[in-house]
Image (tube, rainbow, N blue to C red; front, side, top):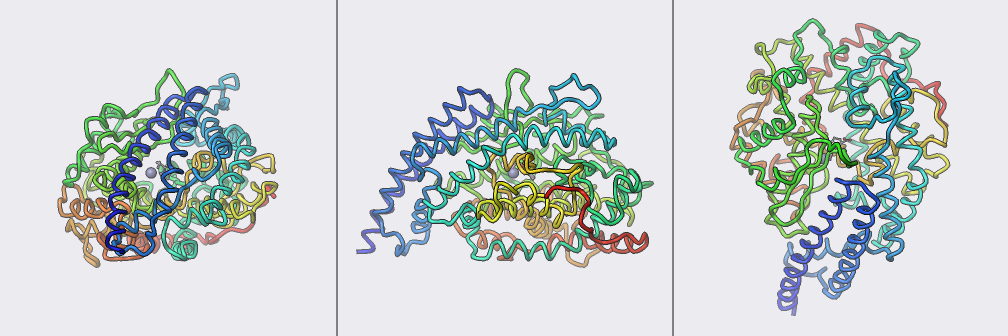
Length: 597
Ligand SMILES: C=C(C[SeH])C(=O)N1CCC[C@H]1C(=O)O
Ligand SMILES: [Zn+2]
């Protein structure tokens, strides 16, 4: 009878989940060895280990099919079986599984090791994305130097990946079908466990688009003031190489010469960090201390022993920041090529947020040791960083001086947050809208690049600095496309982190709607055990419940909504509307004159 069947299934599931934890540990170790020392040999080892593990997963999957779990009464047992019923890429036959692994490791190692020549010294051709090219984009105000770096990087890391990418799409789609999906787009969206995920993304974009368009208009005007109307037009898209970031995804690096009130004292955290001899280690210790101040878990001893927090000089590694769970309850690591500046201070908190999530749900069955959805995992560290970025906190830790905010300083602060958080939304939205079209074969290889830029122009209002052809493949010049990392998670994160922040600030007594002394922009939850305990309760759940239950546990809301973000930025939205009115700046953008289709 059902009772007996569930009892037997429970015994089986305990055994399976333990075996799964060991498999995940081996897979993580193999992946770590390869990405922290990129050699052909380590690539082969990683692929062979993953192949061996995929065979074991397939055998286990065959067994789970024998259990009629769909009618089990025990919610958790049924949910575990449901997750195990998804075999993943291991459903591919061995040869195709290996071929798929090779396309991804080929693209990722190409991206990680790509080099370009310097604009100022054409014989110097050993510039990597981190730190050299990133440094150029954060400091250069020479449009020609920026254009050179943009074009050379997109050639070296983008165009070269096109062949691998088209093979990857075919093989990955075959795996999707073996898992019961029409294509990878449906598979990726199924992880969010809501039937209308793509419609929700579109609705969120409609909610935030007016605010983005105001910010875009203002920034375009300030860039035109600086570079002239030959470089930045009055009514067209913004050239993508002038926004302080290789992908124009966050615009922090142009803050110093575009902020609303330039004569107001600027908080230059990077300068303060350098003046105070900050090291990468100190940045990590500072972040660890913030989490401990919330009564959350300290980084375990293995974290400090096994993490790689600076770029090695003796080998090639994947520098893109990442956080790792080795599924043994003790071994958690970050790999990051940290440089001492405010952008990496934010990234350190972002990565430490991943580790804190791992720590909070490490008691869960291994199949539930993941975010409530992938957006949750990306939002933890960023939510903490919203407090860390507040002038109040920066003063508290000695990275800013001066007194409390006046109106104009507050607008400057909201602007600084807006060019990071609002600017990012259309970028994140387009990256996976593009890939959804590719996986659904609505976008064919012969017009990948045209379609990529059409989306970026329509939604983000940016254009390439030079004409593009189908010999280019600019999407792969972004890490997540070359490394097969889904991106809607960041779009979700940048929305829900404001819902989390608002709830935590209320719990910390730092925010009360309508109270001018408790504005969201000034909130710092540092040392609030009440906030920390509420956050921990949500994180401990892992993916054991559908994410609306986790969201409700912390915020009382069961949906992702832009209301948190819009409330946070309302004073900036009002100011931008008035300012664009005053200058008569055109809101929105007309089609570009650049050719890319
Ligand atoms: C820091 C990470 C590792 Se999960 C990252 O990829 N992020 C964090 C913010 C957006 C996205 C990016 O860099 O594109
Ligand atoms: Zn992340």
